[in-house]
Length: 534
Image 1: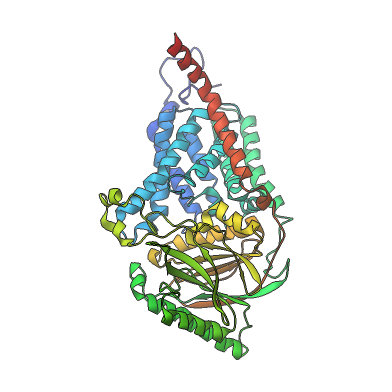
Image 2: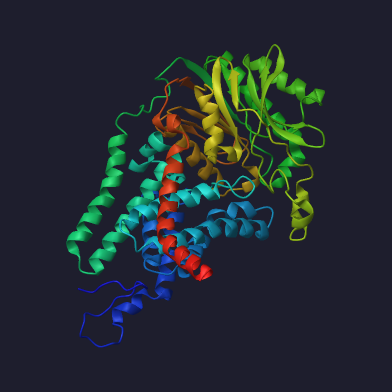
């Protein structure tokens, strides 16, 4: 039976000619590079835009096949190819109105982590149980990418591709990292089955294939004890209105029409009040406006404050307003304000993770050398230091703003503080008619399952949505249209296993991957140490 060489090509049985067989050429670097491209394409197809989440395991499978038996340097190249193939189109929305350079720089920075993953997976591919270590390395790579640099950017994680299907259930037991691990493990087991079958090991190939099928089957079984799709089950309900006022036009220019955006949200809320008075809609207990619904500071602008108060008075319920507020000092703050119809502005939440290069510019003078677009951010946003737990109209909400929905710790902190539902305030106007908004809604759907809570997502220009605890959409809008949803939402106080474990599964799985790397690296380190002391 053919056996694997250290480079992953195939040897002839003993006694055959010394020339490499024709089959071996299929596994040389050009073919592996094509496999890496395929890995990136399959990952992309799994995410919103194409929305084929069941293809997600085939991405890790293709990358595992590409790097198997290779040296770390070749694995890094193949990982970089897969990363660029995936991230360049996935993040294309980031350059729609600011040009190609920021978009490609962001995509390249994210692809660099996949290059590290490729190198690490190649290095550990000769170990026993290598599919397990490879899947754990996916989690470790995403954990690192979600933290460094500048607080990381955990967009495009494997787990965030799952808006339906058996893998989604794992979110309730170990959050996004466990979903990603299940996807990656399914893929690496499929890769192991292919390699075994190629080498003639049919029984081993069948066992690996059965293992790959068992992972999503386990997810399907795990779904059974989760909450159902009802918005109203599991606790006392509150009637929640989500208002999408829309913007005058897509792009950065919406900032120049700040009063028009505010007026749109005021008008939609007053229109809702008229529908309530006519008996066409139920009276809401609270109203959620999106991020940037008032880019005019209502603390410093009496006219903006009067308009918000007029809307709150008309609807007879507090409004969660997304505002840009002056201060502290030379900074500005991305702030959610609870605006009561009787007492006006009250409790606030300030965005804890402003977006680097979007809401503040680190090392501005240095990065200006590469692009003058950095000066589109005229004033840096300050970071808040308090958890996003707010009480609005009798509901205790976990509020996150825009990209914060993809940061595990920010959502977890607010839920653990006692929130009965989640709220995501966002502004997608700067990303045009791209898939960015769909990708953000997908992340919110995973969060709903992770914490067993409904989610109200309000966007200035779409997509706004109300999401049930099983991740299903109870209501959703289109892009660049006005919309209002009114839904009864239960305020839950139960805890999922994912909430109780927190970041534990991510650290444990990352440690498994790092441990496998250390097993591979230890002999070389010992040899180097002996050489240095000789």
